[in-house]
Image (cartoon, rainbow, N blue to C red):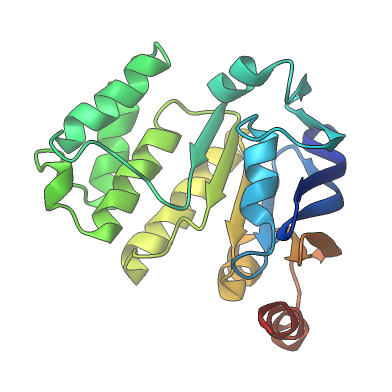
Length: 230
């Protein structure tokens, strides 16, 4: 079995602020992997380290067989990343943002983008400043998916989406995974992990506390969450 993500003893220290410590994790190719934990647990720090956006202190990260530091640009070409907060130029139209994201990757993604916009009910003629949080999330989803990457990394993707669009979002993930894509889903919504993810890990206070199948009961998760928030 090959691995899309391999993290070995990742450590990032922010001083007094919480970072991550000694995190080791493997995500198999073709998996839908839940990366669970409350806000501030270290999930986003781990993801930014994986993508080369953050310089970490110790450890090694391999993404799609490539070194996260040395092969940063090659990795980004093969990854569809959706950050927890998407920032776009307010004056641009949705269609312009999506076309720009494709142009950066030097790919013609028009056919795939059209399909995604239709499935997600996204109006491409509106300007970003006119969009609700949910519709901004849809734009970010299209930008992450339209080039059909080998790996999805989604950071809190469903906040602001109505239940129907959430369902369609996960349907799309399953369809891409069936075609060979791998997905890392970072979330604090346990129900999403139990319903859609095949495997999962829990982060607490910058450490990986649990690694098991997706069948993590609510009481176990809440015990980690409540302790982390106290």
